[in-house]
Length: 547
Image 1 (tube, helix red, strand yellow):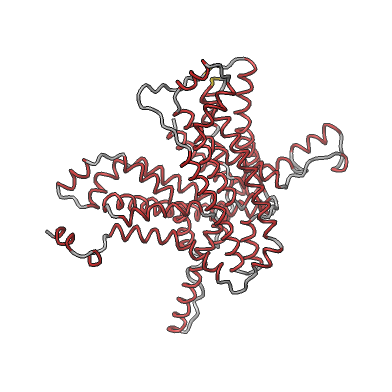
Image 2 (tube, one colour; image 1 turned 45 degrees about the vertical axis):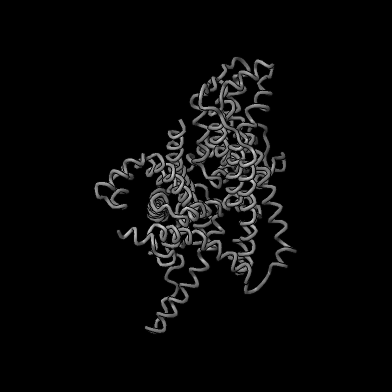
């Protein structure tokens, strides 16, 4: 009876659905940082946009564009070629290489940058061996390429990010029908022609999606480009805000970054919309790998081993060579960094996953248009670079903090200072906004696999919506929820730009950056090793999910 009365009421008099309100609040939290950045860019206290446009902005744009082009092309080639080889052919080491090609994801690109410089610098093992072998006494006796360059940054980031393309391309190749390749072979197409004319066009949407993620990660990167002294849009936000003290200028550069992200997302969606392929459900034959022999097998193994050696084994070996200093493992700074990392990233993972489950369940339960329209908006945070997100979170917070301090001063006569700015709660909020798309996507896929008859039966037995979620859905999606918790936790552990800008205490990521910036790789190694081990846990989970 109450439901019938509610349906007869005018739309404006209906009581708001709590699930709709929850979806609106979550969407507002995600959009608030972006709106704040745009607002402060349009209303700067001191407009330095003409000065930026005439001086540093062209350099920031050029370096960012060159990095995006280089990293995007390299990751597309490495990820696509390795995925094609492990799906289409059998060769020595293929069984373990198809999973080993995911391991570079465990090494953040800034850790790879520190390891590469330590390996190739003048005092590193490579140049030391060259001097010993050839009898050279100083750097004047021989030529060695410069290490801290834009090309080196492209190299490191490509090796760290190509698995994003590899995993999507591998899935696309595996899902293709073997009949198409058999027809192409019968028509006289060789291996290269089958790849270029059949496999690549069918896998193109997946490859483009992977490259789009890579390009967004490239724009977001701060640790690598800062270490290699490459001035990009992200480093420009830091320098204009922290060194120049100009919030409006930093927000204006952040808007340029946001524009690049919007362009990337739009192009990726257009690419997928224009090219669509569908395979018939009946008589679909899987691809049967072809056995390679002789030099062809050795070439295939080498092409798959090299990215693993350079992107995972080399940086991990360099880290391990410095990580055996027992004194550094007991250092108070490292222990404090581990504590704050576990606390902040753990809290962010729990809140993010709970929010993702709440929103997806609410959208499915309410059946109203508002939550359904708002849910895609909440995925926007993952596309927003950490530096932009930090700027958008911190600026409104400082305004609230100042008003709160003024109120306390007026009441008590004591100035408490800034209470919220720099706290762990602010960083947790930034992580929740940044990685909410992971939790939402995982929850949406998991809840979609639950048979509708189960919750209907629970509701008919008197369970409330919340009781049905606890008693029916959560036990069935427990594994997926655990996976989402781990993935959000790992991404939060590796996040550097937002952590540097929002938190006053050291985490593992900021400790690695601080020590390595002072050329103290030995003290940075333990924290870097812990980050890599945490990343390996996520890689293991990813490999298990993609068997």
